[in-house]
Length: 355
Image (cartoon, rainbow, N blue to C red; front, top):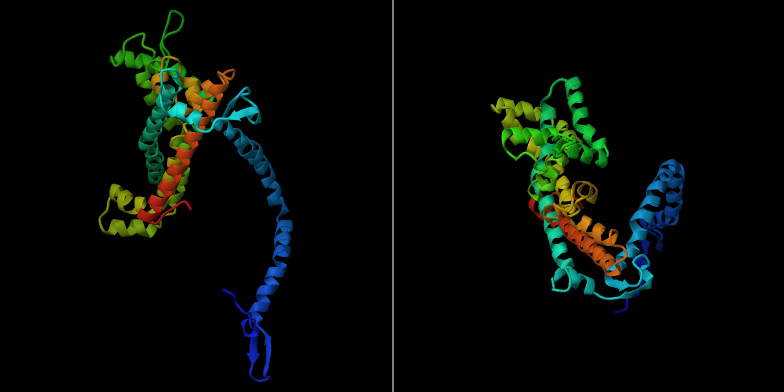
């Protein structure tokens, strides 16, 4: 279908003079379009210090986030080199088939599904027990009237976050270590022995049953205080008039938290929950790698440590490296789907979304 351009589409007829003249609004739009990039350049030049501060971040993202994406092709290839993807032969989805479907000739699928199950369980427990703790801590901080006392408590709860993962795992190991002829039991291990909860000589870090609980409790101690900063900022933003109205209606402290504070910070909670769900299957391998051992593979090994064990620990095996990349690929794709799904559900259910 053809369209014929007429002068009336771009010009305005002036009845007084009987002539056409240019539309003033169109002149403004044309001028804005002509000067657009000049204004952008002027803004960048004016705030050049801020843009200069972005350079290190862009460098990090390009070198450690985008360039490594080329290695993801390794999950579709297999060949003579585990480090040079370009030298490998395209193998389609054969690596994924080996991971997903167990067979008698390969145990990779059994180990992968065990790691995937452990990843989901550890993340699910973290979501159930770890996510509410920062909210509870923020609510408690809000009830402390003394600013000095609140600051002291906040420092003590934030401090573990600034400690290295190696330090955290070393403390956990010392507290839970099994005694021998040279060293005595750790403090917590000895306490449980005295209470009769465990037998003397039991190594809690060597028992698969205790690993998930140890991981979650140490994780809550390490991150709950620091994660409460966002929720505490949302809590203190609640208008005092809302508390006064609730008090007039006879609401106590718990009722105020339930009917005033929690509804007011619901949008913040939903957004943080979406981001948490996005990392549901991204259990950091550093802490697991430092805490687990061959006795606790059954409940401790996650997808990241699976990829580390077969991709780096068994780097001489080219096929194992491809399986490790494929496992991480599956983990990341599922994480992306979870983010999109959680955001869509939150947007439709509560009209709150991350994007």
